[in-house]
Length: 331
Image (cartoon, rainbow, N blue to C red):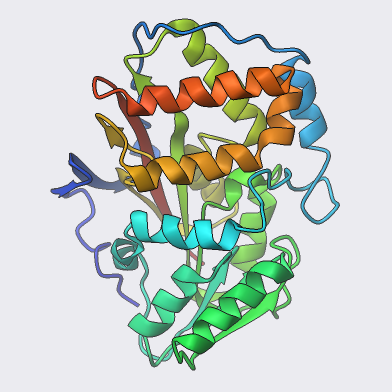
């Protein structure tokens, strides 16, 4: 199977998107480098942290969406999460992700952690001869995904409830396995990748799309606020998971491991943030309030944190950066 967009490894192309220049660079995993972008003064009040960050990180890693210790809690869940995920998919221009997926005619494709089903629906529409399956742990999300697929009259798409650490499929069931924004929620992402490999056919591909620098790379920003943001976000998710996936794949015996690095157009903002991207942040931060209270000490401190964070994005003199790593390995 040949992947469109994966043939010209080592080449570079520049695309304008969200008011910035996006550089897409393909390289071998051994040479993959992460962005390193930082800081300056930003006048606001200092936040205090009540419980130690490390203690909360330890507690959160012991509680999982499915009751096990393999996952962190999905702290941004709310009753409106599927609507937010649909907005997020549109803002992220997920159509551009298709070039990273080596889908051939009649392939079986699995979307793990499919959420609202936006990517699964796109895959099914884009490859009508393929069979697409979306899997997620939450029945609420699957109900939404099934309803959307039915409304769009997509007939080559089904959804299953399942755990990424114990997928409900036989060995070697799929030609292509895709996941995005999933591994950052896992305490054992390498084990999850091993499970994705298990259900992939020999010669098939696993493609994982993950961020680096999620919510932590801002310029200019006051050093003390930068430290606080880094600690808070790191207590909730692995904000640099993308740079770890290629080494995990190599250790698990994947072949031809490659990384494509792009700007994450959802969370990279140059100048003032637009209304929809701001709303996306607001919904996530509000959903995470219970965990944020544990981190920063009180509801008042959370209000200050959120207000200061959004004020940074509103400031036309600031920029915020997140990278996307598309890591692909052949089974």
